[in-house]
Image 1 (cartoon, rainbow, N blue to C red):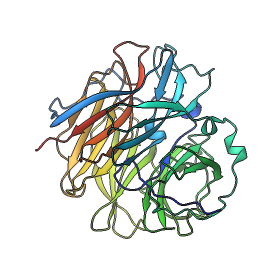
Image 2 (image 1 turned 45 degrees about the vertical axis):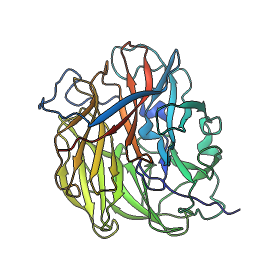
Image 3 (image 1 turned 60 degrees about the vertical axis):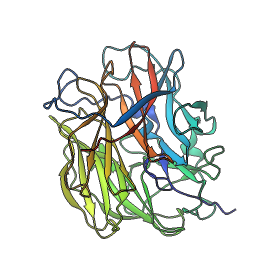
Length: 387
C-alpha cells in the first residue's frame, strides 16, 4: 500500500501535519506562571484590523480543549481543526474537567472559511489503548499530496510514547495508529510540527523528556523515507530547569527555519524564538517574543507578504487570546494585539492558526465564559493591524 500526503504544518498555510495528545495526563496540570490574578505588565495593546469570533464546538456538559495538541489544516476555505472532547466539572482551580470520564478526540470542519462549523467525534482516534496497537508504517508517505493530514498522539506528556494517524482525504477518514520513534531521542511526547522539504523528506519538531524524566526539551528530527524512519538532527537550546516544549516552526522564504517554543521557569512563562540557517543542525536564540503570558503555547504563521504572526493564549488578567507580528523574520516583534480579552478564567488558549483563501487568518483555541460551564472551542477570523 502506498500512502500519499500533503502536509499543512503547525496551522500555517503550508501543506501539513498535526498532533493530538492523550489529554488525561497533560490536562492534569494547568500552568499559570505568576498566578492567575497577576495582570499584564503592559496595558498597551493593539486591535486587529478586523476580527470575528465564532463558535466551533459547544455542547451542554462538555469541555472542548487544547487544539494545539491536535492540529489544523486549510484547503482553500475548507478548514479542519482537531481537539479534545472532555466532560465539564467545576473546579476551584485548574482544568474544569471530570477526570473520571473519557477524553475523546474530535474534529470540526468548516466549508466557508471558518464562519460556520460542524463537529464529530473520531472513534478510531479515541481508542485509549491505541499505543499498544500501533503498527509500523506500511509504505512511504508522500508529503506533497494535496489532501494529506497527519496527527500525533502521546500517552504521557513527560515520557511518551508517541504514535500517529494519517488521512489522505482531508481528514474524512484516518488510518493508523502507526509507530513513531526517533533515532537518538527517547521518551517523546509529540505534538504537531512539520516542515516539508520534499516528497519523502521532512523535518518534525517535538518535545522529549529531560534527564529527570520530566517534560521537556525541544528537538528537531528528519525523515528522508516518507516517515518510516526518523533521525535526530539536533536539540534546540539547552536543557531548561523548567520546561521548553511545543515548538511551532515555519520555513522562511530564504530557507531559514524559525521556531517558537513554550518556555516556563519558576517565575515566568514566555515564548522563545530560535533560528536555524542549516536545516536545523544549529540554532541561534533570538530572544523571547513575549513577556510573561502565564503559560501557553503559540502558533507561528508565515504570511504571503513575509510577515510572521505569533498567536497565543493569555492566562493572566484579562484572560484571552493575543498575538504579535514580526516584519524582520522574528528578530523583533511588534506590540501585542488583543484578539479578545473576555475569558472567564485562564483555562484557555492552545491555539492553531491557518490562512484561508482570501488571506485572512483563522485562529482556533479553547475558551471559557461567560458562564463557568461554557467550555468551548472558539475561533477568531482576523487580519493584523497596519502598524
